[in-house]
Structure formats: structure tokens, C-alpha cells
Figure 1 (cartoon, rainbow, N blue to C red):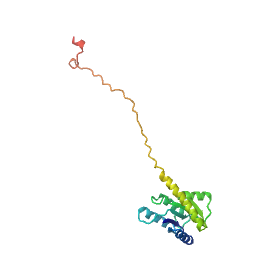
Figure 2: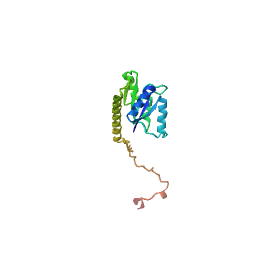
Figure 3: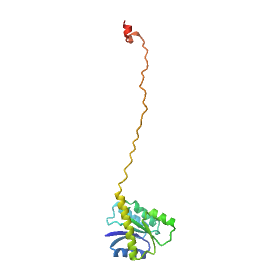
Figure 4: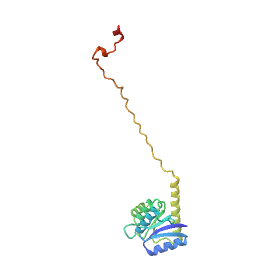
Length: 185
């Protein structure tokens, strides 16, 4: 059975989504604010949570408290166990293109859905499509070999040094010198 995550502060939407998930045969993990969601992600990362991990997260952009939906998405993308989850942002507010782009970028979101949410079957199709695209992206990323570290060899060429020359030594006496052949005669 699949598990999906919801971070939504509106009780009516929260309950409807969980009821839909149940009808679709999907388990739901739900939070009413970003703080709760972040604490749970930390439990997952530390190994304290042993249940099935969600493959999709529906995150309301505007949540009570200091942690927004995009911030929860950002934390999901940093999680070693949840980073490949499909992330879909939701909002009832009209966002400018710049705001939408910034929210999606921060969250690493796969898509954004404006409220009111689509009807039952339309929502299921849309979420399954987004989920399928993320699965394909994750599979493609797994197929690409990890980049190998680039090895750069630095070869130093030393300038040839001239052979050492011995200092000339002056002989102090004739006894210290070896006679040459001509001197021997």
C-alpha cells in the first residue's frame, strides 16, 4: 500500500484528503503545521519512525507558525530517506509567476495545485500523473552513474641544475701534491 503525506491547516480540506486517500487505498500521514511536519521528518531521518514512508507530499504553502509549506518541502529534499518524494504545493491564494516560481524552487516541488482542489477523480489522475513523472525522474537519476572525481596530475619539471663544481684547493706544500709524470722525470 502506498503512503501519502498531507500538511494542511484547514480541517475540512485535511479530512477530505485523508478520506480520499483511504478510498483510493492509500495510507495518509497528516500534519496541521510545518513545525509538526519538520519534527516528523527528523524522526524519520534519525530512524525513530518505522512505518512506510510517503512517496507523495501535499503541502499547503501558507501554514500557521514560522515554517511554510515550501520550507517543509525544502527539508524533505534534504532528507536522506525522503528526498525522492513527489512534492505538490497547494494554495488558495493567487500567486504571481515570480512567487510561484520561488515557492516551487524553495520546496523542490514537482507541481502546484490551486484550491479549490479538483474533483475526486480529476485530483487522483493529476496526482498519479505527477507521481509517475517523479518516479521516472528518480529512475533516470538512479541510472546515471555518479560522477567520478576528476583526477588532475600536476607534474613538476625541475630545471636541471648544473653539476656541482668542487672548489679549487691550493696545495700548501709539495708533500701534499701528487707528482705528475713530467714531474717524476
